[in-house]
Image 1: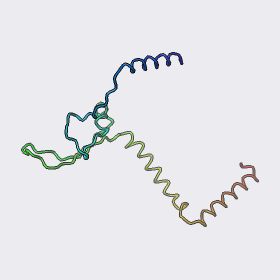
Image 2: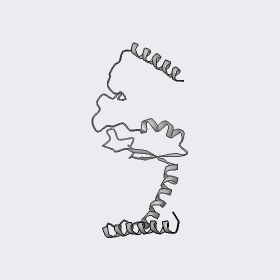
Image 3: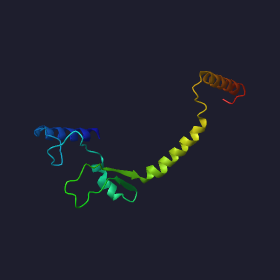
Length: 136
């Protein structure tokens, strides 16, 4: 296995050494005047997979439609993202219930140093009694 990996590595290096490395500008969708407010998102990469799995992954779009008779549209905002069914329904549901149940223990972390010292003494007493009665 090590020999095979080594042979493949040296073949790769041998092929790459023959090529000339070129540095070119980033692909810009043939748009020649980008500015700092424009950005690429991961949506362009995930759109095909999102359409393929559209029965599980729902797309949420927020934008105003451009009327047909409007030649020069005004400034608009477009927002689009995928809502994952499994994450939204299952994982978030479990996490929301876990956070709700953990809120019952908020009284423990109350910011009072005296209470924290008392918790430590209680723990030491619990360990002491556990060793006496062979619980630990």
